[in-house]
Image (cartoon, rainbow, N blue to C red; front, top):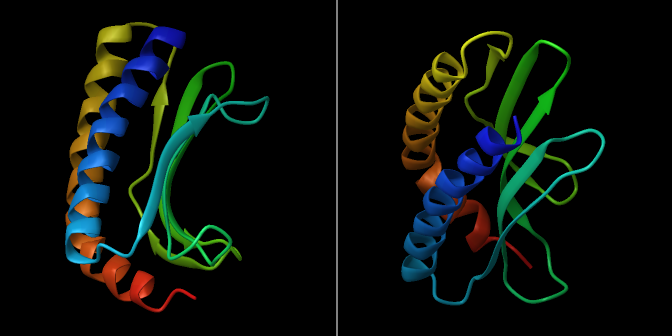
Length: 133
């Protein structure tokens, strides 16, 4: 499972970095950070966050990956630092028992949906970040 999650993070990092590059080209005053973490609740929490200044409001695109004994759940959204969800992204639940190749294939499908989501929310994120204090 760890190899699968690491591979997912690498692919997500590329997508989130490209999104951040486009956002900061449109608005060079934005500060962004890209990262990931894991804990008891999440195998992976990946994000790109935007601010105007170091201690200001934040808008983030997040991807959370959780697992139980027989499935992997991936959810994504765009939200503010106070918890307001701006856009709900694609999600998926993938059985993890059995063939890892089929699990990889289902994650590939989700990544394609996530790419489309990023294209769709780009104007919304630009509008929301323009209002950050």
